[in-house]
Image 1 (cartoon, one colour):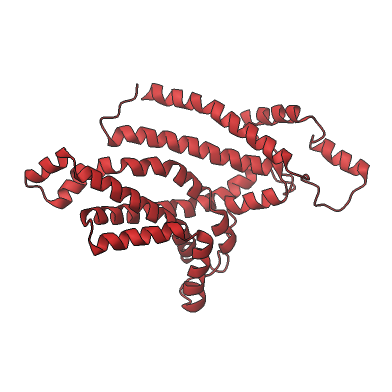
Image 2: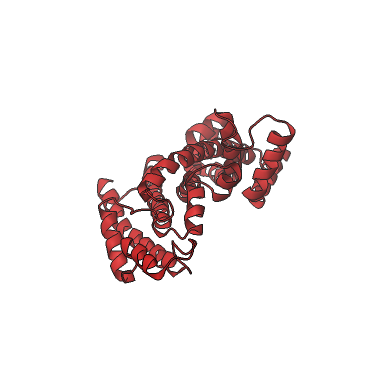
Amino acid sequence: MLRYTLLRILGAIPTLLLVIALAFLMVHAAPGGPFSNERVLPEHVEEKIEKKYRLDEPLPKQFIRYVSGLVQGDLGPSYGYRDYDVDELIAETFPRSLRIGALAITLALLLGMAAGTVAALRQGSWLDKFVMGFSMTGLSIPVFVVAPVLVLLFAVKLHWLPAGWTSQTGISRYVLPVITLALPQIAYIARLTRASMIDVLGRDFVRTARAQGLGTATVVRVHALRPAMLPVLSYLGPAVAAVLTGSVVVEEIFGISGMGQLFVRGASNRDYTLVLGIVITYATLIIALNLIVDILYGIIDPRVRYR
């Protein structure tokens, strides 16, 4: 497995370089520049600013210099947040997105797999129809609709929870953002678990376990749950990365200073290095999480072997 992991890491380097190159070209192709929103400056002053940040250099030279800095762990200075480096901004905002995302994905896994398993065991019943109806609703309604509804109900009408992130301290401010982020994931994981569990419960080894007199709970826990988790694992790689880096809509609605909100600010200000830093962080997370998922495949399913 060590050889497989090393090969996957080496294979991820060209992918990451391609992502960096495409992101670099796209942010520089956008109209305007990082200082175009400032007041009109004399031409010689604007030239000095561009020279200070080396924006007057040809794009290939800028790209090579940027990649050289990345190799040394330097994401460069932020053009929009003066006196800050990009790595400082990401280090400040990422823990907030990480906490909310980790809570949301944990909640989604627990509730989604439980709901999908129950629906598979009660296939065709009213409970199965309820779970699938909830899943379709959760997938159909976007988070920018769910979030205001939850705020209106639990914060404005019932006064149970705070409406914004900064309006109150403590664990209560996590509840609404976490539920908003988790609902679509719960719906998708429930559907995946139900379909996978129905397939696994019809296999020969499950029928043999039942013929030996094992109860339903034991059959599911010991024999069916692990193979039924494989499709969920495949989905979790990009899903966890998306949730951990923060949802732009959720962070904007609840006023959370996370990576999602930071990305919006950077894109609005044409902050090249900030946008690139967040894209690189997101791409690295996806690659790392997909590698972890592949390794977990071999742990959960003994039939998987890495050569």
